[in-house]
Image (tube, rainbow, N blue to C red; front, side, top):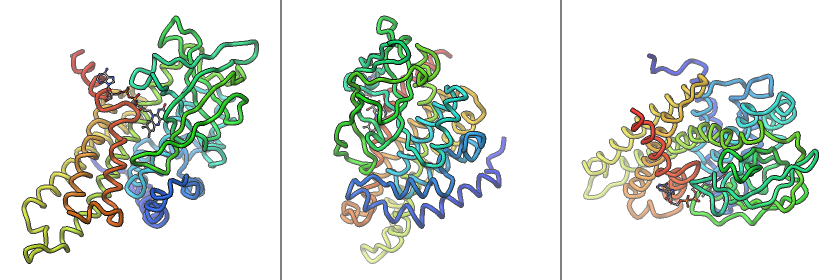
Length: 380
Ligand SMILES: Cc1cc2nc3c(=O)[nH]c(=O)nc-3n(C[C@H](O)[C@H](O)[C@H](O)COP(=O)(O)OP(=O)(O)OC[C@H]3O[C@@H](n4cnc5c(N)ncnc54)[C@H](O)[C@@H]3O)c2cc1C
């Protein structure tokens, strides 16, 4: 066992850390305020070769290992959690679905364009009445000759309306329940496809989240991803990658909180002393640093296993659960450390706290992660 990053992983981490500090972090507050989709960040991520960095070079990616990718999401979230989730959905939920389940033709058609940032990807599983239980989805896909006709509604879709290409799950055989769901690659300009208004959100505010509507939307049969009935398998396997990204997001947010809290505690004086002299503050910082390291270890193991091609649902759910719970806990504590200033937008920790909440909800809530983990525990 070896706890050191390789030289290449360190170089990737240092490179993206510098890039985020210079280009991404300074714009984060403004994007949060305006809710404007951060296209400039996406373009720069493409220019620097970070998009699809874990996709093989043959398909236009950088061929980086999965741990390097997880570290990149973490560094992005340290500067801007909104940009981190846009990047994560584009990479894990969209591009990896194509990589692992697409035909050679589909991969060659789309992945190089996704890697160059010519197109943005999204992933559409959730529906208004099918969230934690996506198998209950109502969106239907009916085969008619050489195409499928889709009808239904997806909700809370990240990059909705902005993305060019959507991986969409729809039922081709409702009687078969979860086994009757299929996955499709659906371009934005598909006739019969439309988008709702971006939701007003608590956090990750510049990542547009919308409904996606299908009203007799015509999708060519060649855009079926995998075989008919593979949809849930594809959705869940893809979510494993996504959940690594959300664990990274949680770690990045807590690192950002520490980055702010430590110098603040050393310089803010009360009762004639820096507040860092008070044990109450020291213990908060010690717990924050310790939990962050624990989350990182779970995350790095999960990312490593996924990179090895091992089915690591248990380890990934543990990393996602632990990292997102600690992100919420410690970003609340970060506000506490800054006192009244923590409540003010200018001091940035309130944004971290708002952004952290979503990590406990999307890509499977904390309750769903516990259900998954418990199923492994009970199997013995
Ligand atoms: C900002 C944002 C972005 C998102 N992006 C995407 C996206 O890009 N693509 C996509 O497909 N989806 C996306 N989602 C959807 C997200 O994954 C779902 O919101 C999430 O899975 C929970 O589903 P739900 O909101 O319907 O909650 P529900 O399933 O209604 O859950 C409500 C509550 O009940 C609990 N609960 C449900 N079932 C159980 C159970 N069996 N045992 C115990 N507790 C249970 C939940 O944990 C939760 O606390 C996004 C959501 C948000 C908010």
